[in-house]
Image (tube, rainbow, N blue to C red; front, side, top):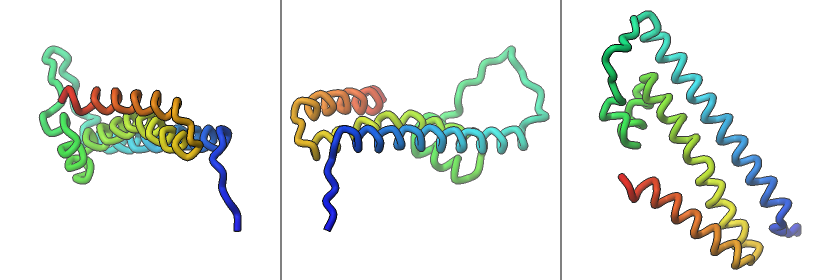
Length: 126
């Protein structure tokens, strides 16, 4: 029977891989969305005289997922950006788990505070 100990080195390795995979996956999703968008709208002339912000369906997670599942380029790009934003939040959440496994209460407290601030900044201002 092998026991897996949670050491600083193991947590750092997992966190590094989590960040790497999150950034690469989000870049691939954004690239795919860019290809879809350019395939459908690449020949349209750009009008820089009128500013058009994001459509209302791309301002909330539910709308972004709906448009991405519908294989619309802008929705896929936004989904990749959401994943990019979620990657460091997942890193902090996993760090909290790692510190809990190591029974390091001081770092658990600091990481918990950072996670609460991150989550509040995302959902508390919506």
